[in-house]
Length: 396
Ligand SMILES: *Cc1c(COP(=O)(O)O)cnc(C)c1O
Image 1 (spheres, rainbow, N blue to C red):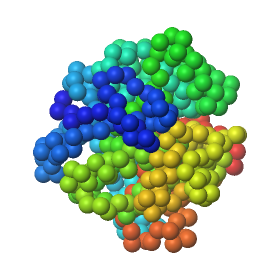
Image 2 (image 1 turned 30 degrees about the vertical axis):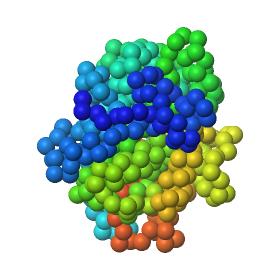
Image 3 (image 1 turned 180 degrees about the horizontal axis):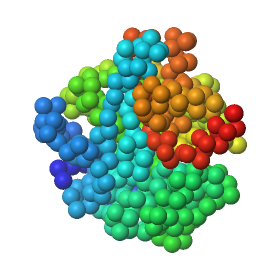
Image 4 (image 1 turned 30 degrees about the horizontal axis):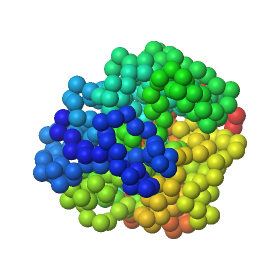
Protein backbone atom coordinates (compact mmCIF):
# COMPACT_ATOMS: atom_id res chain seq x y z
CA UNK A 1 0.00 0.00 0.00
CA UNK A 2 1.35 3.44 -0.85
CA UNK A 3 0.30 4.86 2.55
CA UNK A 4 2.19 8.02 3.47
CA UNK A 5 1.51 7.57 7.21
CA UNK A 6 4.39 8.78 9.37
CA UNK A 7 3.18 8.66 12.98
CA UNK A 8 0.37 9.23 15.47
CA UNK A 9 -0.11 12.59 17.15
CA UNK A 10 -2.22 13.56 20.15
CA UNK A 11 -5.08 15.81 19.03
CA UNK A 12 -4.74 17.87 22.23
CA UNK A 13 -1.12 17.92 23.44
CA UNK A 14 0.61 17.14 20.14
CA UNK A 15 2.80 14.32 21.52
CA UNK A 16 4.01 11.81 18.89
CA UNK A 17 3.70 8.03 18.95
CA UNK A 18 4.50 5.19 16.58
CA UNK A 19 1.75 3.84 14.34
CA UNK A 20 3.54 0.48 14.39
CA UNK A 21 2.30 -0.24 17.95
CA UNK A 22 -1.30 -0.86 18.98
CA UNK A 23 -2.34 2.44 20.56
CA UNK A 24 -5.55 3.78 21.99
CA UNK A 25 -5.81 7.20 23.67
CA UNK A 26 -2.83 9.47 24.35
CA UNK A 27 -1.10 7.99 27.42
CA UNK A 28 -0.46 11.52 28.77
CA UNK A 29 -3.84 13.23 28.60
CA UNK A 30 -6.32 10.52 27.53
CA UNK A 31 -7.33 12.35 24.36
CA UNK A 32 -7.70 10.91 20.82
CA UNK A 33 -4.65 10.23 18.65
CA UNK A 34 -4.66 11.23 14.98
CA UNK A 35 -2.76 9.52 12.17
CA UNK A 36 -0.40 11.93 10.44
CA UNK A 37 0.90 11.59 6.90
CA UNK A 38 3.65 13.01 4.72
CA UNK A 39 1.16 14.91 2.59
CA UNK A 40 3.87 16.28 0.30
CA UNK A 41 4.66 12.68 -0.68
CA UNK A 42 0.96 11.80 -0.97
CA UNK A 43 0.36 14.84 -3.21
CA UNK A 44 2.71 13.48 -5.87
CA UNK A 45 0.26 10.76 -6.84
CA UNK A 46 -2.99 11.88 -5.22
CA UNK A 47 -3.83 14.62 -7.68
CA UNK A 48 -7.37 15.54 -8.69
CA UNK A 49 -6.51 14.55 -12.26
CA UNK A 50 -5.43 11.06 -11.08
CA UNK A 51 -8.55 10.17 -9.16
CA UNK A 52 -11.06 9.30 -11.88
CA UNK A 53 -9.97 5.73 -12.61
CA UNK A 54 -9.54 4.57 -9.03
CA UNK A 55 -11.52 1.85 -7.21
CA UNK A 56 -15.04 2.95 -6.28
CA UNK A 57 -14.66 2.58 -2.52
CA UNK A 58 -12.92 4.51 0.26
CA UNK A 59 -9.56 2.82 -0.38
CA UNK A 60 -9.26 5.00 -3.50
CA UNK A 61 -7.58 7.47 -1.09
CA UNK A 62 -4.88 4.91 -0.23
CA UNK A 63 -2.09 7.48 0.17
CA UNK A 64 -3.94 9.01 3.13
CA UNK A 65 -5.14 5.74 4.61
CA UNK A 66 -3.15 4.26 7.49
CA UNK A 67 -2.79 0.64 6.32
CA UNK A 68 0.65 -0.22 4.94
CA UNK A 69 0.20 -3.92 4.10
CA UNK A 70 -2.22 -4.67 1.29
CA UNK A 71 -3.02 -8.08 2.82
CA UNK A 72 -4.38 -6.28 5.90
CA UNK A 73 -6.99 -4.26 4.02
CA UNK A 74 -10.28 -5.76 5.20
CA UNK A 75 -12.90 -4.42 2.81
CA UNK A 76 -16.52 -5.10 1.90
CA UNK A 77 -16.61 -2.30 -0.68
CA UNK A 78 -17.42 0.55 1.75
CA UNK A 79 -17.53 4.18 0.72
CA UNK A 80 -17.70 6.12 -2.54
CA UNK A 81 -21.41 6.46 -1.86
CA UNK A 82 -23.57 8.65 -4.08
CA UNK A 83 -23.82 12.39 -3.49
CA UNK A 84 -27.24 13.05 -4.96
CA UNK A 85 -28.69 16.34 -6.05
CA UNK A 86 -31.94 16.39 -4.06
CA UNK A 87 -33.87 18.30 -6.66
CA UNK A 88 -37.46 17.69 -5.58
CA UNK A 89 -36.76 18.00 -1.86
CA UNK A 90 -34.69 21.11 -2.56
CA UNK A 91 -37.50 22.70 -4.60
CA UNK A 92 -39.96 22.03 -1.78
CA UNK A 93 -37.66 24.09 0.45
CA UNK A 94 -36.99 26.78 -2.17
CA UNK A 95 -33.43 25.54 -2.69
CA UNK A 96 -31.63 24.60 -5.89
CA UNK A 97 -28.39 23.15 -4.53
CA UNK A 98 -29.38 20.64 -1.88
CA UNK A 99 -27.47 17.35 -1.81
CA UNK A 100 -27.85 14.11 0.12
CA UNK A 101 -24.81 11.94 0.70
CA UNK A 102 -26.42 8.53 1.09
CA UNK A 103 -24.40 6.43 3.51
CA UNK A 104 -27.27 3.98 3.84
CA UNK A 105 -25.94 2.06 0.83
CA UNK A 106 -22.74 1.07 2.64
CA UNK A 107 -22.07 -2.54 3.65
CA UNK A 108 -24.00 -3.18 6.91
CA UNK A 109 -26.33 -0.28 6.05
CA UNK A 110 -24.51 2.62 7.68
CA UNK A 111 -21.38 4.74 7.48
CA UNK A 112 -19.99 2.84 10.47
CA UNK A 113 -18.64 0.50 7.77
CA UNK A 114 -16.02 3.09 6.85
CA UNK A 115 -14.65 3.46 10.36
CA UNK A 116 -14.66 -0.22 11.13
CA UNK A 117 -13.09 -1.22 7.82
CA UNK A 118 -10.17 1.08 8.68
CA UNK A 119 -9.97 0.05 12.37
CA UNK A 120 -10.27 -3.68 11.74
CA UNK A 121 -7.66 -3.44 8.97
CA UNK A 122 -5.21 -1.71 11.30
CA UNK A 123 -5.94 -4.19 14.11
CA UNK A 124 -5.17 -6.97 11.63
CA UNK A 125 -1.91 -5.31 10.58
CA UNK A 126 -0.93 -4.94 14.25
CA UNK A 127 -1.79 -8.57 15.04
CA UNK A 128 -4.79 -7.72 17.27
CA UNK A 129 -7.14 -10.58 16.36
CA UNK A 130 -9.67 -10.29 19.22
CA UNK A 131 -11.86 -7.19 19.22
CA UNK A 132 -14.40 -5.69 21.59
CA UNK A 133 -16.61 -2.62 21.62
CA UNK A 134 -19.57 -1.02 23.29
CA UNK A 135 -22.16 0.11 20.77
CA UNK A 136 -25.72 1.35 20.72
CA UNK A 137 -26.16 -0.16 17.30
CA UNK A 138 -24.58 0.17 13.90
CA UNK A 139 -20.93 0.21 14.97
CA UNK A 140 -21.29 -3.24 16.50
CA UNK A 141 -22.82 -4.64 13.32
CA UNK A 142 -20.00 -3.18 11.26
CA UNK A 143 -17.25 -4.42 13.61
CA UNK A 144 -18.79 -7.88 13.61
CA UNK A 145 -19.00 -7.99 9.80
CA UNK A 146 -15.40 -6.88 9.24
CA UNK A 147 -14.17 -9.21 12.00
CA UNK A 148 -15.97 -12.06 10.23
CA UNK A 149 -14.35 -11.13 6.92
CA UNK A 150 -10.93 -11.06 8.62
CA UNK A 151 -11.48 -14.25 10.65
CA UNK A 152 -11.19 -12.37 13.95
CA UNK A 153 -13.02 -12.78 17.23
CA UNK A 154 -15.58 -10.06 18.06
CA UNK A 155 -17.24 -9.18 21.38
CA UNK A 156 -20.08 -6.65 21.53
CA UNK A 157 -21.51 -4.88 24.60
CA UNK A 158 -24.87 -3.37 23.66
CA UNK A 159 -27.69 -1.67 25.58
CA UNK A 160 -30.67 -4.01 25.34
CA UNK A 161 -32.86 -1.29 23.76
CA UNK A 162 -30.63 -1.22 20.64
CA UNK A 163 -32.51 -1.76 17.36
CA UNK A 164 -33.34 -5.40 16.63
CA UNK A 165 -31.39 -5.36 13.36
CA UNK A 166 -28.17 -4.58 15.22
CA UNK A 167 -28.67 -7.41 17.69
CA UNK A 168 -29.49 -9.94 14.97
CA UNK A 169 -26.68 -8.97 12.62
CA UNK A 170 -23.98 -9.24 15.31
CA UNK A 171 -25.07 -12.78 16.10
CA UNK A 172 -25.27 -13.65 12.39
CA UNK A 173 -21.72 -12.34 11.85
CA UNK A 174 -20.54 -14.66 14.61
CA UNK A 175 -19.84 -12.08 17.33
CA UNK A 176 -20.46 -12.71 21.02
CA UNK A 177 -23.33 -10.36 21.90
CA UNK A 178 -23.63 -9.16 25.51
CA UNK A 179 -26.88 -7.25 26.06
CA UNK A 180 -26.65 -4.69 28.88
CA UNK A 181 -29.40 -3.31 31.10
CA UNK A 182 -28.00 0.21 30.99
CA UNK A 183 -26.65 2.99 28.78
CA UNK A 184 -23.83 3.01 26.26
CA UNK A 185 -21.53 4.37 28.99
CA UNK A 186 -22.25 1.26 31.11
CA UNK A 187 -21.58 -0.94 28.08
CA UNK A 188 -18.32 0.96 27.65
CA UNK A 189 -17.16 0.08 31.16
CA UNK A 190 -17.90 -3.61 30.61
CA UNK A 191 -16.10 -3.61 27.28
CA UNK A 192 -13.03 -2.00 28.88
CA UNK A 193 -13.09 -4.61 31.67
CA UNK A 194 -13.35 -7.43 29.14
CA UNK A 195 -10.47 -5.94 27.17
CA UNK A 196 -8.27 -5.84 30.29
CA UNK A 197 -9.21 -9.28 31.56
CA UNK A 198 -9.21 -11.19 28.30
CA UNK A 199 -6.65 -9.35 26.20
CA UNK A 200 -9.20 -7.99 23.71
CA UNK A 201 -8.51 -4.86 21.66
CA UNK A 202 -11.19 -2.21 22.29
CA UNK A 203 -12.12 -0.33 19.12
CA UNK A 204 -14.43 2.26 20.74
CA UNK A 205 -14.64 5.27 18.52
CA UNK A 206 -11.88 7.88 18.87
CA UNK A 207 -10.39 5.71 21.63
CA UNK A 208 -8.40 4.01 18.90
CA UNK A 209 -6.89 6.15 16.15
CA UNK A 210 -8.24 4.63 12.93
CA UNK A 211 -12.03 4.68 12.84
CA UNK A 212 -11.79 8.42 12.23
CA UNK A 213 -9.48 7.68 9.28
CA UNK A 214 -12.23 5.65 7.67
CA UNK A 215 -14.88 8.26 8.37
CA UNK A 216 -12.75 11.12 7.07
CA UNK A 217 -13.11 9.65 3.56
CA UNK A 218 -16.63 11.13 3.51
CA UNK A 219 -14.94 14.53 3.38
CA UNK A 220 -12.68 13.50 0.51
CA UNK A 221 -15.65 12.11 -1.38
CA UNK A 222 -17.85 15.18 -0.92
CA UNK A 223 -15.07 17.41 -2.30
CA UNK A 224 -14.22 15.03 -5.15
CA UNK A 225 -17.90 14.60 -6.06
CA UNK A 226 -18.34 18.39 -6.14
CA UNK A 227 -15.47 18.65 -8.65
CA UNK A 228 -12.89 19.57 -6.04
CA UNK A 229 -14.87 22.35 -4.42
CA UNK A 230 -16.33 22.59 -0.92
CA UNK A 231 -20.06 23.05 -0.24
CA UNK A 232 -21.28 25.99 1.85
CA UNK A 233 -22.77 23.83 4.60
CA UNK A 234 -22.49 20.21 5.80
CA UNK A 235 -25.19 19.01 8.22
CA UNK A 236 -24.11 16.08 10.40
CA UNK A 237 -26.08 13.98 12.94
CA UNK A 238 -23.72 13.80 15.87
CA UNK A 239 -23.26 11.02 18.39
CA UNK A 240 -19.61 10.54 19.28
CA UNK A 241 -18.79 13.03 16.53
CA UNK A 242 -16.27 10.87 14.70
CA UNK A 243 -17.74 11.79 11.33
CA UNK A 244 -17.63 15.55 11.84
CA UNK A 245 -14.10 15.29 13.26
CA UNK A 246 -13.06 13.10 10.34
CA UNK A 247 -14.51 15.39 7.69
CA UNK A 248 -12.80 18.37 9.33
CA UNK A 249 -9.47 16.51 9.37
CA UNK A 250 -9.93 15.57 5.71
CA UNK A 251 -10.49 19.22 4.78
CA UNK A 252 -7.17 20.19 6.40
CA UNK A 253 -5.41 17.34 4.62
CA UNK A 254 -6.97 18.32 1.29
CA UNK A 255 -5.70 21.87 1.74
CA UNK A 256 -2.17 20.49 2.24
CA UNK A 257 -2.62 18.26 -0.82
CA UNK A 258 -3.57 21.32 -2.87
CA UNK A 259 -7.08 20.02 -3.58
CA UNK A 260 -8.79 23.03 -1.97
CA UNK A 261 -7.77 26.38 -0.49
CA UNK A 262 -8.49 27.71 2.98
CA UNK A 263 -12.27 27.84 2.40
CA UNK A 264 -14.34 25.57 4.62
CA UNK A 265 -17.98 24.54 4.76
CA UNK A 266 -19.94 25.62 7.83
CA UNK A 267 -20.23 22.46 9.91
CA UNK A 268 -23.63 21.96 11.53
CA UNK A 269 -23.73 19.50 14.44
CA UNK A 270 -27.23 18.11 15.01
CA UNK A 271 -28.16 16.23 18.17
CA UNK A 272 -31.41 14.87 19.61
CA UNK A 273 -33.32 16.94 22.18
CA UNK A 274 -33.03 14.03 24.61
CA UNK A 275 -29.26 13.68 24.24
CA UNK A 276 -27.39 16.86 23.37
CA UNK A 277 -24.13 17.14 25.36
CA UNK A 278 -22.25 18.85 22.54
CA UNK A 279 -25.04 21.31 21.74
CA UNK A 280 -25.23 22.23 25.44
CA UNK A 281 -21.48 22.88 25.55
CA UNK A 282 -21.69 24.92 22.34
CA UNK A 283 -24.45 27.10 23.78
CA UNK A 284 -22.58 27.56 27.07
CA UNK A 285 -19.35 28.52 25.33
CA UNK A 286 -17.51 25.53 26.80
CA UNK A 287 -14.60 23.63 25.27
CA UNK A 288 -15.57 20.24 26.74
CA UNK A 289 -19.05 18.76 27.21
CA UNK A 290 -20.80 17.67 30.43
CA UNK A 291 -22.15 14.10 30.22
CA UNK A 292 -25.94 13.70 29.91
CA UNK A 293 -27.47 11.71 32.77
CA UNK A 294 -30.61 10.26 31.17
CA UNK A 295 -30.06 10.15 27.40
CA UNK A 296 -33.12 9.28 25.32
CA UNK A 297 -33.83 9.37 21.60
CA UNK A 298 -34.99 6.78 19.10
CA UNK A 299 -31.92 7.58 16.98
CA UNK A 300 -29.57 5.02 18.52
CA UNK A 301 -26.54 6.45 16.72
CA UNK A 302 -27.07 9.79 18.46
CA UNK A 303 -27.67 8.31 21.91
CA UNK A 304 -24.14 9.09 23.11
CA UNK A 305 -24.17 10.89 26.49
CA UNK A 306 -20.42 11.64 26.62
CA UNK A 307 -17.86 11.77 23.82
CA UNK A 308 -14.08 11.69 24.20
CA UNK A 309 -13.77 13.84 21.06
CA UNK A 310 -16.18 16.53 22.30
CA UNK A 311 -13.58 19.32 22.08
CA UNK A 312 -12.72 18.31 18.52
CA UNK A 313 -16.37 18.52 17.41
CA UNK A 314 -16.79 21.87 19.15
CA UNK A 315 -13.57 23.12 17.57
CA UNK A 316 -14.71 22.17 14.07
CA UNK A 317 -18.13 23.74 14.53
CA UNK A 318 -16.71 27.00 15.89
CA UNK A 319 -13.77 27.34 13.50
CA UNK A 320 -16.02 26.70 10.53
CA UNK A 321 -18.56 29.34 11.56
CA UNK A 322 -21.19 26.61 11.80
CA UNK A 323 -23.57 25.86 14.60
CA UNK A 324 -24.86 23.11 16.90
CA UNK A 325 -28.57 22.50 17.39
CA UNK A 326 -31.15 19.96 18.52
CA UNK A 327 -34.19 18.45 16.85
CA UNK A 328 -36.94 16.31 18.40
CA UNK A 329 -37.59 12.65 17.70
CA UNK A 330 -40.95 13.57 16.12
CA UNK A 331 -39.22 15.96 13.75
CA UNK A 332 -36.76 13.22 12.76
CA UNK A 333 -39.54 10.75 11.99
CA UNK A 334 -41.46 13.33 9.92
CA UNK A 335 -38.28 14.20 8.04
CA UNK A 336 -37.60 10.51 7.28
CA UNK A 337 -40.96 10.34 5.46
CA UNK A 338 -40.26 13.57 3.64
CA UNK A 339 -36.83 12.46 2.40
CA UNK A 340 -38.29 9.14 1.30
CA UNK A 341 -41.26 10.72 -0.48
CA UNK A 342 -39.30 13.39 -2.33
CA UNK A 343 -36.03 11.62 -3.04
CA UNK A 344 -36.52 7.86 -2.74
CA UNK A 345 -34.01 7.78 0.11
CA UNK A 346 -35.30 5.80 3.12
CA UNK A 347 -33.09 7.40 5.75
CA UNK A 348 -32.24 6.40 9.29
CA UNK A 349 -33.75 8.74 11.92
CA UNK A 350 -30.26 10.27 12.20
CA UNK A 351 -30.43 11.16 8.50
CA UNK A 352 -33.90 12.59 9.06
CA UNK A 353 -32.43 14.77 11.81
CA UNK A 354 -30.27 16.60 9.26
CA UNK A 355 -33.30 17.56 7.19
CA UNK A 356 -35.22 18.69 10.28
CA UNK A 357 -32.23 20.83 11.26
CA UNK A 358 -31.98 22.33 7.78
CA UNK A 359 -35.66 23.34 7.91
CA UNK A 360 -34.98 25.23 11.16
CA UNK A 361 -31.89 26.88 9.71
CA UNK A 362 -33.78 28.06 6.62
CA UNK A 363 -36.42 29.61 8.87
CA UNK A 364 -33.97 31.39 11.13
CA UNK A 365 -31.67 32.54 8.33
CA UNK A 366 -28.82 30.30 9.47
CA UNK A 367 -28.76 28.90 5.93
CA UNK A 368 -29.94 30.83 2.88
CA UNK A 369 -31.87 29.09 0.15
CA UNK A 370 -29.25 29.68 -2.56
CA UNK A 371 -26.47 27.92 -0.63
CA UNK A 372 -24.95 24.56 -1.50
CA UNK A 373 -25.89 22.26 1.38
CA UNK A 374 -24.96 18.60 1.97
CA UNK A 375 -27.13 16.50 4.29
CA UNK A 376 -25.41 13.37 5.54
CA UNK A 377 -27.79 10.45 5.67
CA UNK A 378 -25.63 8.25 7.83
CA UNK A 379 -27.65 5.05 7.59
CA UNK A 380 -30.57 3.14 6.14
CA UNK A 381 -34.03 3.10 7.71
CA UNK A 382 -34.02 -0.65 7.08
CA UNK A 383 -31.89 -0.99 10.23
CA UNK A 384 -34.65 0.74 12.27
CA UNK A 385 -37.89 -0.92 11.18
CA UNK A 386 -38.85 -1.88 14.76
CA UNK A 387 -38.04 1.64 16.04
CA UNK A 388 -39.85 3.46 13.22
CA UNK A 389 -42.79 1.07 13.43
CA UNK A 390 -43.17 1.74 17.16
CA UNK A 391 -42.90 5.51 16.57
CA UNK A 392 -45.61 5.51 13.89
CA UNK A 393 -48.03 3.38 15.92
CA UNK A 394 -47.46 5.63 18.94
CA UNK A 395 -48.36 8.75 16.94
CA UNK A 396 -51.47 7.32 15.16
C1 LIG B 1 -23.09 6.20 14.87
C2 LIG B 1 -24.11 6.89 14.07
C3 LIG B 1 -24.19 8.30 14.05
C4 LIG B 1 -23.28 9.19 14.87
O1 LIG B 1 -21.98 9.12 14.36
P1 LIG B 1 -20.74 9.80 15.09
O2 LIG B 1 -19.72 9.91 14.04
O3 LIG B 1 -20.34 8.91 16.21
O4 LIG B 1 -21.18 11.13 15.58
C5 LIG B 1 -25.13 8.88 13.21
N1 LIG B 1 -25.94 8.13 12.45
C6 LIG B 1 -25.92 6.78 12.45
C7 LIG B 1 -26.88 6.03 11.59
C8 LIG B 1 -24.99 6.11 13.26
O5 LIG B 1 -24.95 4.78 13.24
